[in-house]
Amino acid sequence: MANLLRLLVAALFPIIASAGLQAQQAKVSKTHAIVGAAELKWTPIISGWEIAVVSGDPDKEGQPFTIGPKLHRTGIPRRKTLPF
Image (cartoon, rainbow, N blue to C red; front, side, top):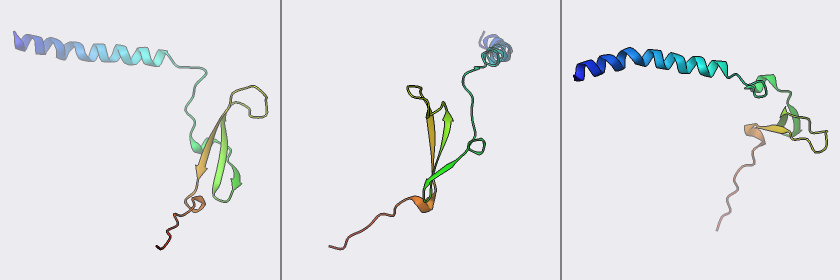
């Protein structure tokens, strides 16, 4: 009985998994996308710091937008230690 159950599970698992994968591929969103850092237009703001608009338009009032920061190692302030 246990062997029959294992065989049944082994036979049905690929069918169920492929059906789930096909369902995910069918639900491709038209409003969301994955954007890589190389695809963005980076604007320097201060030494070692850059920002890029990921989505939206920051110039339009009342409209949502998303920005992404890029902090270079040289732009991060160093920790200061004080002698006591």
